Length: 63
Image 1 (tube, rainbow, N blue to C red):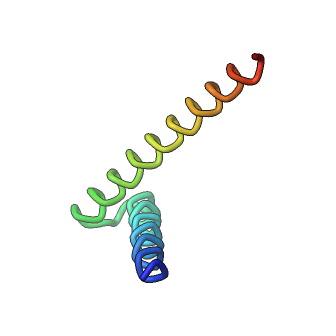
Image 2 (tube, rainbow, N blue to C red; image 1 turned 90 degrees about the vertical axis):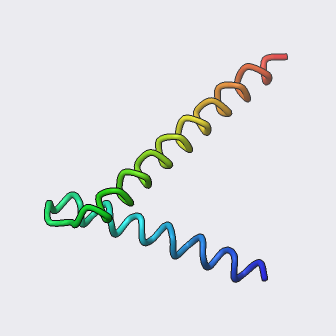
Image 3 (cartoon, rainbow, N blue to C red; image 1 turned 30 degrees about the vertical axis):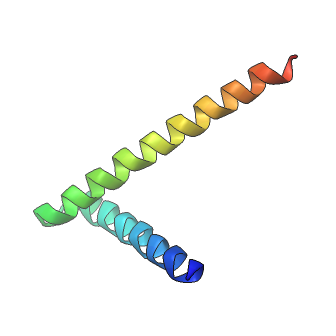
């Protein structure tokens, strides 16, 4: 069951990456641009969360 869930997540991520590439080429339909935008926003949120966690870890290591 876990493999099935991870496979679906992997396929969604790959689909998002394909839509980002397709949009960057400039000939993507509207739905692909929406998927690309969603993928971009999600990646920004994850990067900010990771950066925030790294800063919090650095602050607690001084203790």
